[in-house]
Length: 408
Image 1 (tube, rainbow, N blue to C red):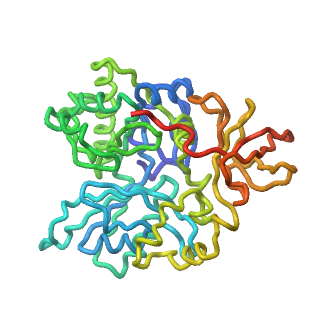
Image 2 (spheres, rainbow, N blue to C red):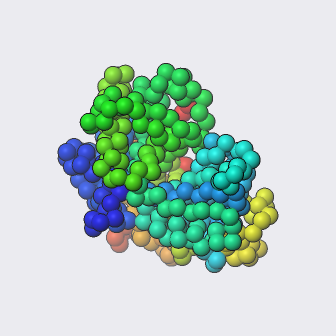
């Protein structure tokens, strides 16, 4: 990831240009929007596999004997309870309880006692692209009273996601035999080091060591491969390109369809899976309970202090997002027209009671779906509402999220 270009480009930018990708600015990054048909890319992930460049995401490494305690204080989740080799979804909140970002934390150490270097505890925090610098700064500030080191490695790291029902079979083809045999036993939200055999792809001879995680943002089985940190941008690009090309070659060798995928289908995939997006459902103006992320704040089980805890406790006592205020609901359209972010949500009398945060015509389901922040009195499944689609009220019904759930 370059910090010298405006907008930034990822180590795989040249691959995307060569593939004829259409680009969009996303959080200050020039990212592939699609390579051809976003519908075809969406369907590839649902039926076979898709390959995503997510190198715009941040990577912040937190190490030291008090790394777990520092993250317990900085984040909403109980990071000290995360077992070695596992991952945890969490929020980082402001003192007011609003959401600075949502992120994933990977525990990398083996759980042993602190050694002479005092760095037995090691975690990798992966924030959203546009928030990486702010999250790194907040973690540094919040860790000041702990024996810990916070290092922003975002510019030295690449991230490739392989998602879809054929993902495991494709990935196994680029791993050594022993690692491939262990792949089926890697649980969801678990991670371990892995060796990718590149076969000399993209001028790279030899193997590339990655952090391999069974995580994703599509609602399908899949993996994320974190490459680095590598200080030399040229070396990082070579390694990332070698892995990208090796995965595409592996798909062909095992007879699986694999398409490179852009951000357009990533958004439609995550919305079908009912997953919130920072900047849409999550932002600095709303609490987790108002944003569909209340489950990421374990106020009952986490007794230790963390930034924003007092405000979130007060909000819970006030019933914010449950009995008062607003909350996120899932909506299914009764017609053909899709709701879009910012469109007003109306009650049966035509009064505005909320706003759409995300909306698309679902490629998988064949009807419009949306997430919306509405007054809590309209949250019950089956409630009939409407969305003002440029002056015309279109019917929508509150349904249970997620809209799509994969079959095993």
